Image 1 (cartoon, rainbow, N blue to C red):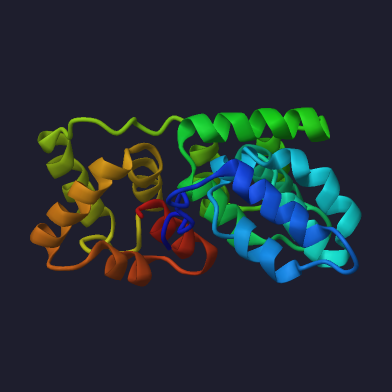
Image 2 (tube, rainbow, N blue to C red):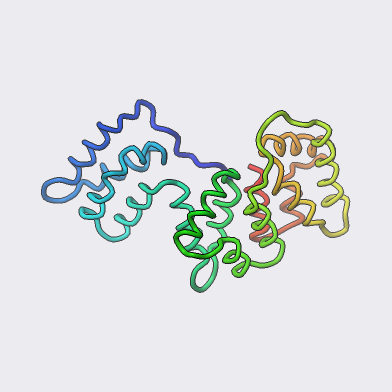
Length: 230
């Protein structure tokens, strides 16, 4: 699990992109390959600078390709709110989507997502997720949704040592697993802090944290813990 891989396009020119997109959509037929190449190689923030073309995309494209291109033009938090709604509606739950979004967004981004979800669907995102999930996986999602993760900043080495020792005792040194301890630490600490914790954990235990998570948990919970630490 890694963070988003689409980076800002170097030398981005909103006017040039808008002109290229208009050219790809005018006349007989539509140059879908050019549209795809442009929109999938720009960051979400860059796409927002040419988002006034969304109506043109809707009128010129059809089917799943239209849906994908239009969704790419949405602001990130609106896209995430829609993706979460689709992940939990109907029969079954798309746990991969829940994991990918909730484990990788910042507290500020999560607050925006929850606000959009409330406005769009007149429902509380946490209520929908808790009604559609269960067990420790549900508990971890709820902790992430609280958007109380520490901000990245100077790392407290004393707390790093404490967290690494507690994770060691909660997993490798324990008969069974203290999942709540993993949830508390991985769900509330900053990413920079966790990276130091995992380094210290390796020194203390002789294991990569991923090895321990793989041994001590399974299924959706395992994937969520692995995603949260990246």
